[in-house]
Image 1 (cartoon, rainbow, N blue to C red):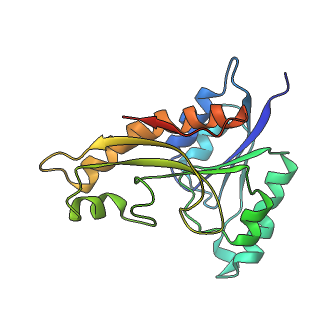
Image 2 (spheres, helix red, strand yellow):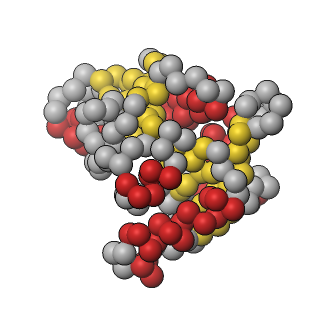
Image 3 (cartoon, one colour):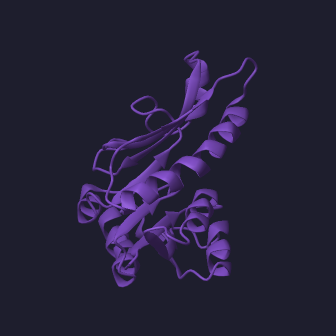
Length: 198
């Protein structure tokens, strides 16, 4: 069986990347082919290299607001690696429609809220401020609209009395590390049926 090749884009420590990489063994239909970051200091790059995965850095800073120029460099290592699927795992740059359209239907993102609630940043604080009873994370296909696209999986956590945004973030992260690998496995096998976890 030929494995699907997965490129994972990160900006920081790469904890979701690690959970994806660790899941892609045995009879899993995919294997990691690249970990790519916009930040040369991203802790996840060392973890990926230690796991024997090719890494690349395309720093966004020299491009100063020219997103198209940044993305035309960003796409090169992904294409060179022959990636079939692109997973955003804490990649903190908003991607343009031009970039996304090249990978439409093959690009996943994990977002720390129960979409369509709380697109964008500061999701944990916003859920607390709204007085929600539950919160969680969503894996979705990436489309040109931010944190939009077909939902492929959601995991829920209860919001407890006295929770801080950090408490909530930690509880959601545990679920992210379970949900993202489960969705990727199913997606790589060609199944887009959403996974719901409590």
